[in-house]
Amino acid sequence: MKFIELKVHASRQGIEALTEIFLKYGIDRLSIDDPADFDDIMNSENQYDWDYVDESLKDNSGQEPTVSVYLNDNEGGRALLQRLKLDIMMLKGKEQYGEYGENIDFGRLYAEDCIVDDEDWKDKWKENFKPSKITDSIVVKPSWEEYSAAEGEKILEIDPGMAFGTGTHETTSLCMKLMEKYVGESEKKPEDIKVIDVGCGSGILSIAAALMGCGRVLGIEIDDKALSVAEENVELNKVADRVSLKEGNLMDGIDEKGDIIVANLMHNLIMEMAPAARKHLEKGGIFISSGILLEKKDMVASAVEKAGFEILEIREDGEWCAIAAKSRRKGLYEKIFCRA
Image 1 (cartoon, one colour):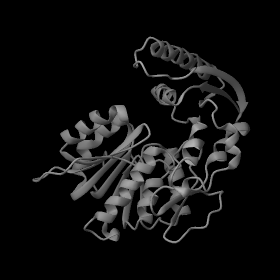
Image 2: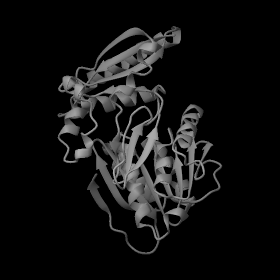
Image 3: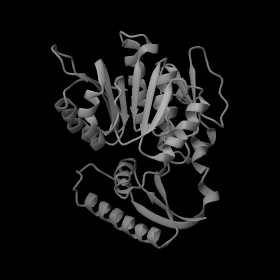
């Protein structure tokens, strides 16, 4: 089967702007190649960040980031290709006219396209997915990689497919770190903690909650393909006795309550679901949300507060942030802003 590959050369700032364009057209399957990620890992103070990096990646260090998407090679796909190219040209024009600020540089935003066979690219994304220690205890590894756990480490094995999360994205790792923190600080024993994972995707956060010892986890996902991937990953990690999955839109039709609700979604969906999240939390429960660009942080935090929450903590990593909140009751909670 043939596909149209659209590859756009950009800067790191440009990656986020391009992602918004693609999402506008419902394109959420992106291949992002940012060689600067290698430099970030090598310069990290944490040894585990670079122990598992393929040394061949050094050859790409310093090169220009690219974002690639794949469209059907038919009339509809070609029409969509032209609309995307026009939007990318308009984005560059707005950047040059200063609409995004004086210090914004989206890069060249040079778009090129070619026809490819699905055999050429369907497994290419696997090349740079290596074992990675996400929290103090959780190591995420792909199913095709070997890894021996150190003392105290729990292995989360995942085969995300081409479309769904691997755990290495900042938003996923932020959610996982906050979950581990609040599971550890809960007055309840881990086996008594119930977690609801809204928009569970590949199931990575649901599985992580189970590996942290949580006794009951519900993953909700609107995409049936993602749900199928999540089911496979739950079985792969042998946590089906604690993790159940349900197809649904946000929290519509959900009767259960959780001690922790985690949602790694787009900022507008977080704002939409915040009131429902409060209703579905047990007394003293925690609402963890991410998928929020820093520029949207204040707007989302305000919506979460308006829904009846007190912000406990906002963590930032790169261009993204995650919010931990608790239902507002008598008393005052300190707002803590820190970097991951």
